[in-house]
Image 1 (cartoon, rainbow, N blue to C red):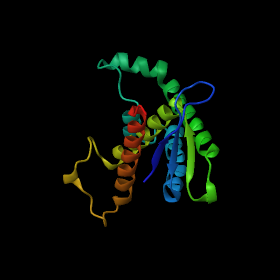
Image 2 (spheres, helix red, strand yellow):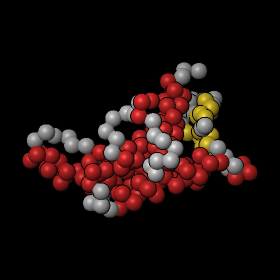
Image 3 (cartoon, helix red, strand yellow):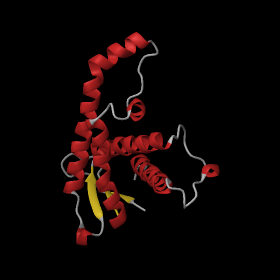
Length: 172
């Protein structure tokens, strides 16, 4: 499983930095994820259900919501596209010693960026699988289920999100 290593403070700013370490298989999987989100953002009308989950309604009143979407819709999508540009830069800038693992150095903004990205991917997968709330142990998926790999990815990303949040909340 991935791990986060808390690093010493940045010499210039004094702010904390972390190193996200992805093992070889994890790195291959994570490197493929931005393209999945980009495909949705390129064709937002292709899957309205997922887009509604990524961009939930802001107003209960339908007229206000339509006006809000008219004014902000493209800005919201553009913000996610910018997130993908930054995530790809993190991935490309990561170190790959022996091409086995991927090590990405992150500051506080980088950790926030990665948490938003992982959350978006989890929302996409969960919505595609028809999951409306967190999975419990009682909802285990059989290994031979055709969707088992996507459930496994969802579980992995939940673990990644968890270790990132733990790293941020660890004072030392």
